[in-house]
Structures are given as C-alpha cells and as structure tokens.
Length: 611
Image (tube, rainbow, N blue to C red; front, top):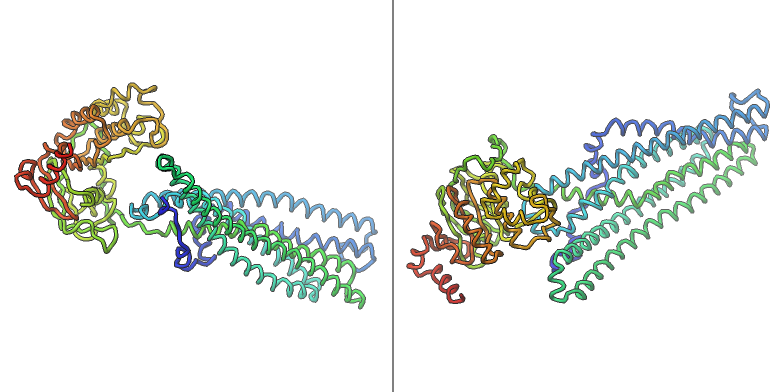
C-alpha cells in the first residue's frame, strides 16, 4: 500500500523549473476572454473608486486649511467658513458614497468572474483527465488527481477573484495617489516613493519563499489525500491484515510533513503583514519629520501636511490589502501551476486527423457484423526497455471463438488492452477488418466490441442506468438484454427492480450480481466482437451455469476472445492461442494441443491434477 503514497524529496528537486507568474496568468487569459464584458466593467469601476480614494485626503487637508485660514483651492475661496466647510463635507460624502456603491459592485463582478473561470477550468480539466491514456493513471495516484480537481481548482479561483483583479486595482490606486502627491508637494511624495520601492522588493522576496513552501505543502496534501483514498478503498485488507496501527503511523508521518510545510507558509505570510505594518508607521513618522521641518520653514501648510499623513496611509493600504490577499494569491498561483501540469500532460492516444463518419451506436435489434482481428508483428511494453509482447502475429477470423491461455505474465490482458486501444503498440500494427485501429476513431473502435472484465465496475445510480450507461436504450431493450443473459429474474427480485438505486461501486450487490449486470451491458450493445477477460471467475457454480447458457446464445455470429485460467471452460472454442513471455508458442483446438504434449498439455494436466 505504501508504494502509492510514498514520495521522496527527489520529486521536488528533479521537477522541471517552475513557470513564471506571468506565463501562468497568460494561461488564464482565454478563460477570462469568455467573460470579457463582465471583466471589463469591473475594471472600469476601478477608475471612480481610485479617484475617490485619492480625493478624500486632499479634501480633509482643505478643511484644515480653511480652519487655519491658509490658502485653499479657488473652489472654496470667497465663501464664509461655514459654507466652505459644508461644501468640503458634501464632497467627502459624495466620494464616500461612490466608494461604497461602486466598490461593492466591483467586488461582486470580480468574484462572479472568478467563479465562472474556476468552473470552466474544472470542466476542461475533467475532460482532459478522462481523455488521457491509461498509462498516465498507472503512474498517478487517484488521491493526487482528486486534489488537483478539487482543492487546487478552488484555490485557483482566488487568482482572479481575489488576486489578479485585486492587484490591478491596488496598482491603479497607488499610481493615482502617487500622481496626486507629486502634484501637491514633490519632496514629501519623493520620500514616500523612496520608502515604497525597497519594501516592494522585500515583499517580492517573501513571495518567492512563500511560493516554494506553498508548492511543497500542496504536494504533501496530495500525498495525504492519496493515502486516505488508498486506505478507504482497501479498508478490508487493512482490517483483515491488522494494518490499522501501521497505516495510522504512515498517515501521521505524511500529515506531520504537511503541517511542517503549512507552518512555513504561515511564517512568510506573517512576515509580510508585520513588515508592512511597521513600514507604514515609519512612513508616517517620516512624513511628520520632513513635513514638520517644511512647516517650520513656511514651505508647507498644515492642511497639506495633514493630507500627506493620510496619503501615507492610503499609499500603504493597497499593500496591506496585498498582504491580506498574499496567501490566497500565492496558493492560487501554486494551484494554477499544478493544474497546468495536468493540462499540459499530452494525450497519447488520439483519433486520426481525418475522421471517417462515426456510426451511431446500434440498438439490440440491429444486426451485428463479426470482425476480423489481426495482430501483425506486434511489440509492446509498459516500459520502453521491458517488452511484454514480442513480435506477436496471429489472425482471428470473423465469427471465430478464440481463447488466450498461458502462465501469469504471458501478455493475455495486454492483448485486450491493445485491441481496445487503451495503449498503443510499440511496434507493428493491429488490424480490424483490414484497417489499422489507429486509423479508426476511438468511439467507432469501441462501439464494435464489448469487453467484460473479471470485476464489473458499477456507478452510483439505478440498475437500468448501469446497463445503458447513459445511452438511449428503451426499457424494452433493457429488459430484452437482461432476459437474453439470464439476469432478468435476479433484477426483478430487487426492491425496485430496474429502478433500484445502487451505491457507489455497487456495494449493495454481491460480486456475482455485479458481474451479471456486466453481461447485460454487453448484450444490449450487440457488438460484433465480444471479449471475456476472466468474466466468469467470480461466479458460483449455479450462476456460472446460467451465464454459460446465455453465452451460447450471445456468442452466435460474433467474433469472441476469451481469457480463462480454468482450461475446462474453453474446451469448446474454435481455437486456443497459447502464450509464453509475450510470444505465441502454440495454436490449435483443445484436442490438437493435447496431442502436441506441449505447454498447453502441461497446464491442462496440472489443473486436472489439482482438481
């Protein structure tokens, strides 16, 4: 169990260099373009909000200048003090009203865009993951994928809703405030700018450290979820082999690593917030010192000094907001980086560039066309240096019933995976009715055949939907397929018959009952090629007898490939292909192979001896 969740530190150190924030944000631009009107409106609203922010300190300074009888702008000159102060108060109320109304609307629009972008990315990510080849899932723990599809995508939404637009708004506010300050008094403005530049560099330094720690934290969270998923799925093995304490200790170690990395992110996040608080106080103190010196020299008015004290606060408010958004922004960028790793994962198995028209899925009443299968010098390996199939060549004629036998690891299941194109051959080709299966659309290829595996997988839903699997078969066709495979009586005994709700993975059915539904799935699709991969291994004697009776009807006028370890079940097939180390070593019917006295005869005698 631990192999799926163990993770060496090399995974981080050998990882390709991280993408820049700009390249990551560029990945979001096509998604943002889908909601460009809402996004543009939210950006336009930043202008009056920022102008209102810049005007308020100036108006306060004008009020103080009026009280101190200092020079003021012409708009307030020549008025009685009360009237002038009333005019200042009115303008302040207008700026406050503008900020309250437009700021709330702008925030709503940004959050709306962020959620829409998050939903779009989640849809694209799910579609991309389900299009990846089986080879990808062989090396990727399910728990890690779930983390990227859920928590990573949720954190990614904050890049837009809390981060990207927030950064644009804060930068715009800083520019407006700085321009206003330089217009009013360049010495004080220059001093605040000199303080702002180094503190920005310090924040960037903390940001980079936070980013690294946050990436490691999310990697540990993925490992944590993978361990949790593995233990829940394998709970029977955990309990039967008394692995509770061992697995708890393993989970504790991964959890401790996760907590350690989260503590590091908290450290850098707190460092940014604390630094900004202290620097903002230093900036105000510097304004008081330089401004007071200028006031004593009659080079600055008290009202303007008061305005600059407020401007100092307003200048650092966007940075404070950035500090508050710091965690979500960096977590979002980290999540975006991890999501982009999945989206950049190449789709190995693709349809041909020029597709032939894909035929519709046939209903049970339509005739089947038995297919001819040809393996032409096929080589294949799950790893490039370890071949599972070696120069394999054979032909299965239309309507022929062929069994694949051989020791464990001979390559029987690999043949089925290649035929269904869950993997592509390393060398050679596989032909279906004379056409290379790589030249067929995947939907068309898999429409022509149905595979019944040893462990039938069931989805949450009712019995009928687990037979139709989302296709438009009528209830009459479902019942006919169930009757054809001798499973109708079992279904009708369920509490709600075909409408009986099944739990996830069909845990409210026995293994044999789940397998019966897999046969009904095959029958309703009426395929030209039927593949049975140890399909009757989990059935009791009585159920297997019912299925064998159904198979006598189901296999008529169909090409069939049967994998079975119990050689007594394949005695009636047309031909048996015997495999060893990925090579075809014998071929013939049951009696011919026994007469050869080769590998098949040895396997058969061994099973008879065990019986």
